[in-house]
Length: 284
Image (cartoon, rainbow, N blue to C red; front, top):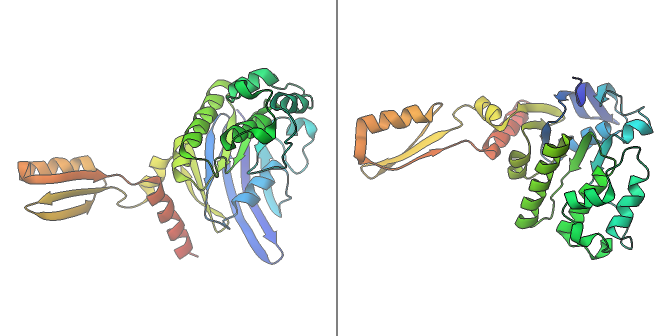
């Protein structure tokens, strides 16, 4: 099966400044992939190139089998985009807006089914301007899904959400992926969100991909990512451990019930992300 996204040798230069350097990655159909990176890493530029909104300086890019820079309206109908913000259509009612947008696509999602899918069934006749922040973000997703896309781009999808709205949104995205098989590429600064939603993480720093894999695979690249901590005879100890279960077994074999406050600290995605970024910056 062809990749949903295939990028190789991607390069972007603004004037005399290189923003992307030889970026290469592949996203398979049905994957949920998070693109992480510090401010200025090149995330927005990368996404805009993939969406067809920005011309690249060099490299090969295929999205749903076509070059976004020259793809036509039929290709665009297969792609959904949820931006951080867009101009409000406050006077439109929810169903009216989605029905109007659906009319532009050859095989759209039925507006009523879509409204139900994003959890807005009780707000179909409500004006957009009166929706809460969480309801509005659900509408943003509905707009991105209106054409029943094969690929959905989510740009900072839960920025400004409270914890409850963020949890609901995560459930919504997982449900859409499970039921429709939609491929998702999201950018976020929320590492917990990336770990909850994405099966795979891409880390972009300084215009280069410095990490690509599941959270567990990325953590495996970081030496001594896990740590065992314990107290023995009133003294606190901590030791990096590639195989923490083995170390715990050995400690109990030596010290038995003398051990106190034993804990295994697993390397978090935040630890891994920071280690990858710091290593990349140190190498530049």
